[in-house]
Length: 283
Image (cartoon, rainbow, N blue to C red; front, side):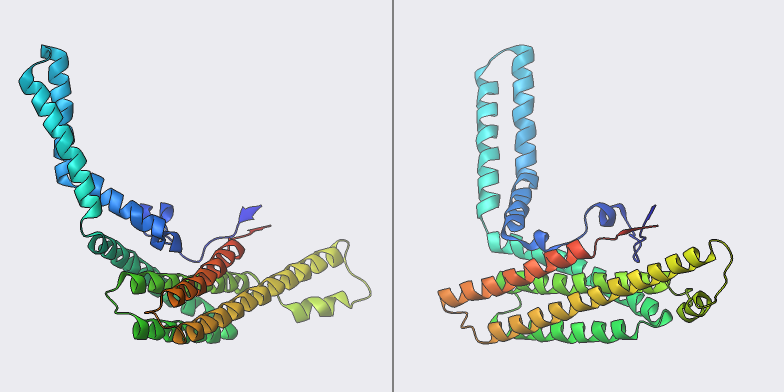
């Protein structure tokens, strides 16, 4: 048994172990980004070194007022540094983080689209090419609608844009599996197999081999159809979300909750798409 090979080859260790997903744009991820900023700030690191040095000195030379004052003041400074860097300008810290994640998502999307178009063209995946263009139009329409509701510098816009981008990326991943399926059955001549199966006399084991090859072909075709269906559902959900957002007054708190719910449904759709597009194991 061998694992299905991915259409996309990672270019770095980071890409292998840390693919960018919607989870990187969740409220929890934004809080983690602020914590990392706070604990990674130079004032915290240097004050922590000062605390450690003071404690080591106390262990070596015994307690003294100077060392105690240095340890206490350094501890206070480290705590103040974390608090200040976590609480001060949270929007700016989160915005920089979201922009970085968006750049990574955009790069991933562009690379995958380029490779995918080449594969689908090579293996006659015309329906996949049409779907990819349709998905792009749906995604662009959703982004344009978000831009009418928010300033592009707003954190809410950036987070919703990231969600929409990942939905699009999940659909592209689905089409990459379609391309792999098309590649795997490219050499199977179904009409020739069916013609040979009609023969009254075959060599020992020949009928079984032909039937197995035909079954593999049909299984891949069913898988392709299912993935196309998943992408049709994604397009419908994106369109419904776009319409829902167009009817929302973002100045209204309850309306904002409705928008959040619409985006959450997109997130759930993406999760299901990721689960379905996990490379399968084939003989």
